[in-house]
Length: 163
Image 1 (cartoon, one colour):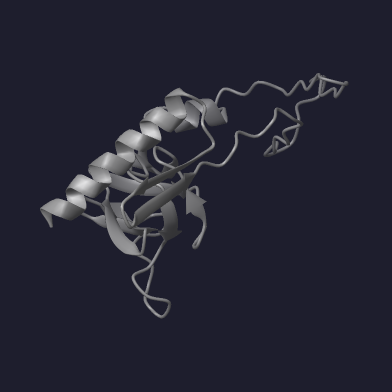
Image 2 (cartoon, rainbow, N blue to C red):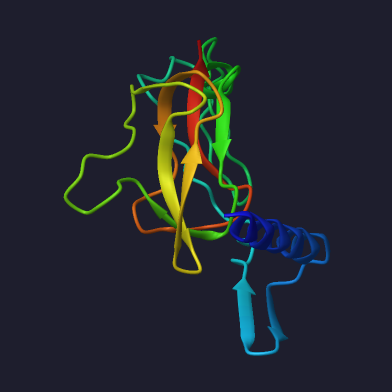
């Protein structure tokens, strides 16, 4: 078990070096062992669609220009609603799985109550299934990844409202 944790620590350090130096991929060979890590490339800035919930107030300026999007400002904006939420992030690079097996129920869903030791998902890395724990108490309010999706170190997987 200690060897597995040591390997994960080494991988995390390599990922930090990759991120700090803007490296997209790295291959390391040591004897018969070989590790290949590849980070997804950052998306180029582009047009972002912002959903507007509810009717737009009369006289509100909702204009779209070449690089200009103006939306009415509401008292209860999304940013204000998300204030105070806790992010549950990926501890490693790998593949996200929401359930322990294809025929099982998901570990958590929106509305699930979590405790610090609650397993929220599994991330498969190098054929090893790693349980990710919530490390906080609260209620899941958003799941930001889909089952089978590749995730990066530090990527936000869930948002939770703390107790």
